[in-house]
Length: 247
Ligand SMILES: [Zn+2]
Picture 1 (cartoon, rainbow, N blue to C red):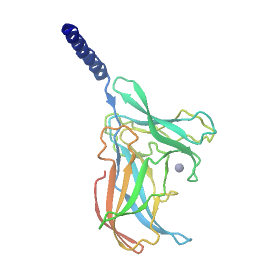
Picture 2: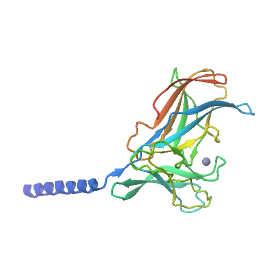
Picture 3: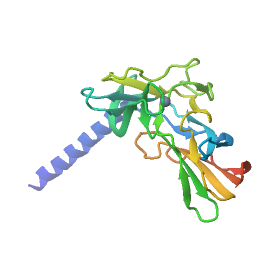
Picture 4: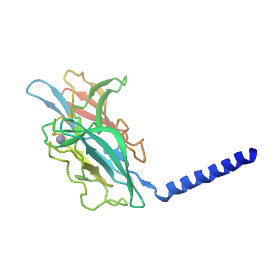
């Protein structure tokens, strides 16, 4: 009986080693999402009396692998596509991993599909850490439209991902992605690219943008996803006090 147990144990060890060997044969080439330092901060006073803090955000992929998502839905009566992440490996293969992210059509005056909440913006009081505003932007159609650093290994020298699906009746699979070394920029003039600061008192605040706030996606480093800038707001003037993490 004891012998049989030992045999099973040894067999178990060999099986475990075999699994490890199999996994080691193809290593994941994971993306790494990060944010560039926030830029173009300015205040818009709208005709209907709102004050909007506008700024440009750029999300970048500084990992060793492509960041690629696929959206899909069963029929057009479902407004949302479910989203899976395609993770590539160094043996030329890939696997698709389901995520909690969703894609939806239009919503910001743009006739294309968006990944919901890819980025998250917040304005925080510096003295007590209270969140006083969040970004209006919800949908992100991301692709290779900003050159960050094409000397990264695996960085394509021209854009590989180009835009998002435009057909409202699409069922998928619909691909969107960000190549290594490339960024996706949201200019301060874009619809919803702001935090509403109507009625906010003058003072010192921290503006923060985070890539994949909800941690839906697999990436190599999770600690470099945010960028911050500390500012003083006084009427319509913005003074930069200092930058935190960011590229
Ligand atoms: Zn859009």
